Length: 465
Image 1 (tube, helix red, strand yellow):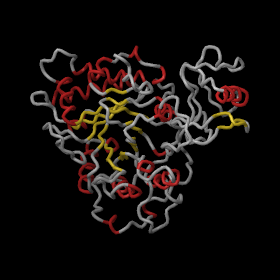
Image 2: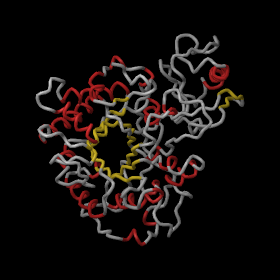
Image 3: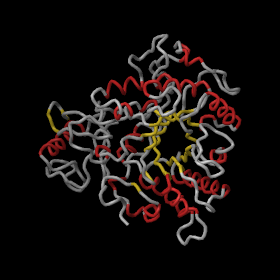
Image 4: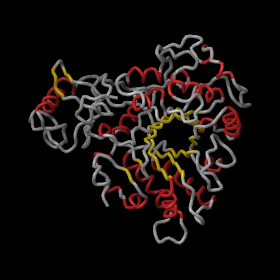
């Protein structure tokens, strides 16, 4: 079968386990493959001033409820790791493709990567492989990126029978685990979020066998990808029910035991998180518990939005990690008109320091500040991934472009100008006058620049962050 559905040549995902089973690494198109390894983050020995800590903030009355600390917590540790789950308009949007789009419209970009450790690309597909543009962007900033394996609704139960059902003539369950590992290795991302929101059909659920499958997937990811991860979502329980625990309990701990972490559901309250912290700390794994916070609210403590700080403050007090779901709310709900202002308010606040009495702070107040780039270089072209014009040396040289990775050339179109070093055997960025001029000007003015990072490979030249 084809690498991707015929009507979506820009992306790779699978709607069914049959499609997953039919995929082979040899069918992978270069346009879907990341060309950027995960850059190690340099240690910040003298970081820029952080926003004020919780001790500097006078919490609102609601924040004073039930603050009895868990028996193992330390004093207001910074949240780490911080996971962001990108659920935005169904995913696989035009500006996320390797080529981006020529448009003057504002698009969503995730700009505050210095506070993020793990980025999950989420879509309601059976298997969601992150677009190469997102993989490159995250890796250039030292952020791990995971795809999603999702089973939900009645169709999900049917799919589980195909994977784990007894007496089938198809591949065994380990084959599907191997396929997931191979996808991550081939396309260049770092692992999987497993979201099982369907119960297994009768006669197909065996807890020890399923645990062994999860552990096998985790171990193979570790072997195949340096730093690979498999994170379990809090939905399915050991009695084969979809029953959100909102933390770690006896009903989901066996899944946590054989995965790299757990992403909890969003409906937890202080008693859930205190109990979870005690269990996780006894196991020596408090930082492997990523407490879910839904930016759309929907039952989250603080009701999401600009008040996510209430949930983050609670997580911070108990020494656990956090998982922020759908931060694209700043664009999808509030609209593009003031996206930049709203995104800044959401992540770092209206002003960088929060005055006493201001209530809960933005994400930056609770999250650990992390280095971007590497210890050897730092690069920026000051592009946010969208704008009205691109100039090099004062010359207008590109039509309006919208792109997650700021700028990635089109694959398979050679530059027609003989002066361009991409005119011979490497793909360039187009054949229009504007793109040819950009190619020429870029070569003259940027190729030997101390800030220009050029990666000659058959898919893209990586610049920007």
